[in-house]
Length: 254
Image 1 (tube, rainbow, N blue to C red):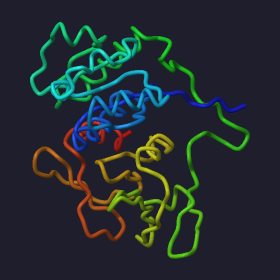
Image 2 (cartoon, rainbow, N blue to C red):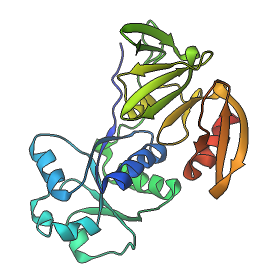
Image 3 (cartoon, rainbow, N blue to C red):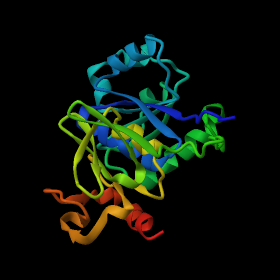
């Protein structure tokens, strides 16, 4: 019998660009963590919870609380909060709201990992622990087949057919290994990242999840990043984000 995988549900409260960057970093720091929403204000977060949505932990900008001074009176005191700040400092006001941790807005994955280790220690009931999805009779729980669209036609592709997944212009595409042809998908990269075989696929930046077999040349790039030339025709360089370089090197050589 298949056991549904459980996640630590994370609510992110931040300006959109920083919020989505933090959302991606959360999953890199804690594999059990999943962002359920990225919201631009604390008032939006309060309404989100009042609408019946759940969150195990909130990661939000401390500076945004100045725009919503009554937020501390409205929030659920039982939901731990991790404040991000360009200049982290501890205040009595923050700890009145069940503050779990203070982290720099540009913290490393290692620092964020320690935050989630603290969360799992203090809130064991919210921690999915060692529970994993059990294999079914047909195989593992990882996604190996994809329904894609080209024009008015639907196609089924296997993971061996995928060079990389690309988010562009608000859409998600499967880029085929041999032909380099683009196929439209209904999936989001964030969801695909959780469903794919981590030994085969790696999210190199916000826009691309790359198949290890699609890697051609790897070169050093500016600002401590890496540039990948894929084995398929692609007009742009594939850049490995600076914060992902270390994990990418370990992944590609495992």
